[in-house]
Length: 362
Image 1 (cartoon, rainbow, N blue to C red):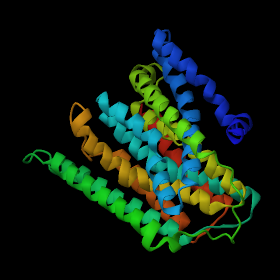
Image 2 (cartoon, helix red, strand yellow):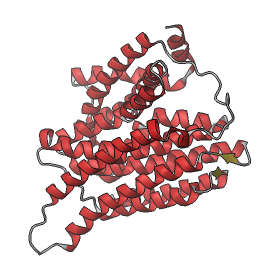
Image 3 (cartoon, rainbow, N blue to C red):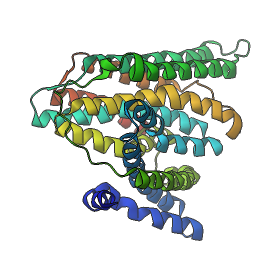
């Protein structure tokens, strides 16, 4: 508990937690406008994601590498999953698709780009596990193929006989889920040595984690609050985005992924500044692969039960090309196992091109 209190006092991201009781109070008293609730819920999700992330680390540290790795993989993107589920329940399927594509691109371009930039400004050259980066980027490329095929089939078959898009999407979703489970078995069991850090032993230093009991309590409370706040966010996203002049594509592709991954970003950026780039690369690319291979098919399966209509894997052409070009950029900049600040600039410039385009498309 002492470590918990110390972290609350010392980490500014937790101070944003003041927004949590405010947004809940305004929601229950029906006192806030859609725009105000939209903005407050965005702010509240950031510290909740941080609480969730730290709680997961506390539990994972006591369960061993295999179970701990599985736990981190399962709960690492819980914030985004809850937002997606709330949006599916409201029938905002296009928002979910934009957010999925945005989460993959944001984690792989923005998070990795800032990590390269911050680390490179302090160290001339930083090394990371090239094989790990290659495997993760290969998984992302497989997902690009999986999402492009339904999109292309839909476009080229217009005017012809009806395409069984729901069946194609469901089949691909199941296949992606199997690929994801096999990737966990590969990385945690049969070839775990491929994913070892390039740093010398003892390079990570001692990490302070919360006691298991504290972590479990925080995990339960954080997950519950995230579910409530995400519902509030989704309820106000349409009206608020219109009043603020933002398209759902921009909100889904840029804003939701940055907010949902805020805690992971803080960890990745901090590790890069400490010359622990393997941690940054693992968080950024691992999170992207998990969103693509696990969260995406899970949303397709859940949509059959909670959405007004099932979600398919036919993404808008612009989103597909952003996902493809984002993945290719990551492949080209990470294939040497070395980074500099300028590689970070290149990654961020591609991400900025996507953001500017979506903003002005409205």
